[in-house]
Length: 341
Image (cartoon, rainbow, N blue to C red):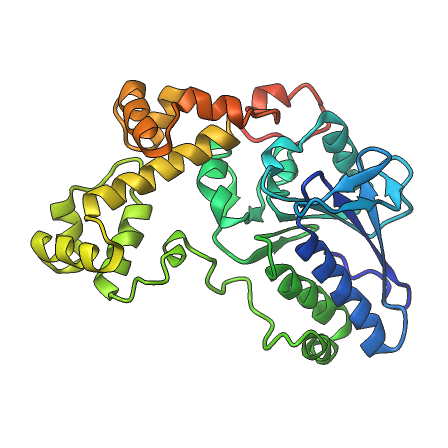
């Protein structure tokens, strides 16, 4: 992000996509407002923006009347794309064209949570580090294998920044405050927010196995990490047990004690969860989804998927239809965009 003239307020525009997370938007704006309060001068200003006129409904179903539309937004130093669980569906031609235009004019562009999908589809992440909400990591990597996706809480790479979502937007905003106005001011804002410490980008991202807080056993945690890192080509359980230094029998006993099911079933559930994300968030053919999740055929995936979720992969896809562009080919018509190849 460009610091700009510290004597002139930096203008942030928050692009509110339908279903945006109000927590992240409010947290970022509150951090800017408190920087003004603590600094005792107008260091920042902000506005909300929508792609179309009229109110925008947030993830919690509250409607927000944006201050401006994309077409009539005031001069900005930074625009932040704010998306909720369906960021992969928000990359409309209008939004992408406006973001490219703003970037070409020198404006910094960022994304919160799944807004990274929009920046990627718009071709703004080529050659840059980026991050995204943990739930979208696998499907994002499948869709954009050439992009440099990390597991960081947030990434700033030149004029482009991305944030994994939730309260990490506070750490990102305070990092910007520190870069422009000093760490002392940023720490004072953190104190106002009762935010113990400003986390660094490399702080642990929220991994999938942390969704199982009952995993106290270190062997089970190691096994789950290995499973999550080897979904396309599942490891034999004997190999998995050997890698963490225990017997297969001990591995099975520890999984039953900690997770209430054996490692084979748990591993299968991890692969099926990935399949569900890919079906909901990408337009990959079902056979490619199957192969990406370690299933040899689409029929085998369908059998296991139906047993786990009560509907077939095709029924899942119809329920969560993908409206966002699914490949680079759909986006290369614009000669001004940077596209991944």
